[in-house]
Length: 181
View 1 (cartoon, rainbow, N blue to C red):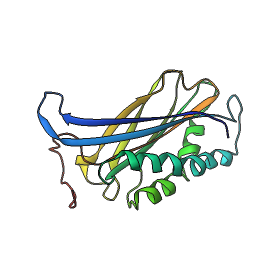
View 2: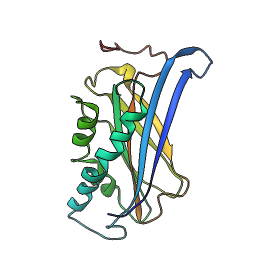
View 3: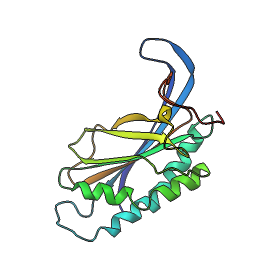
């Protein structure tokens, strides 16, 4: 596995789009740019890509946990493949091995991790979905982080993304909030 770089980002949201203030909400994301060993190939067996999640997931998530001021309540994952890759390459990086190290780092999580994957050009954005770690029916926690790296992914790269948040969207009004926060 060749990792070109890992980028961490932290957002502290203190108001909505109209300026109505809120208690601070912190969202953090990690993005690792890795070489895609299957770029440009018609490869049926993708299990080598599963290992990216088991190797990078624990360290990426451990750093994200330290960046949050409160325990993680929601999580999500995404993969953006370069133009010489296939959408299935991103799926193989995310499934089936990334959830376990993320859950271990945050101390659990009963709900399926929301995910997204696509193929794009250098500098493209990926929308990483967030959802409550224990209750997939908590609509107030359904959110999105839009991520990108200016010089990635190159044609033969993948970007593996993991994100955590310590609260809901700003001023949610759609669904019930789980107890505990």
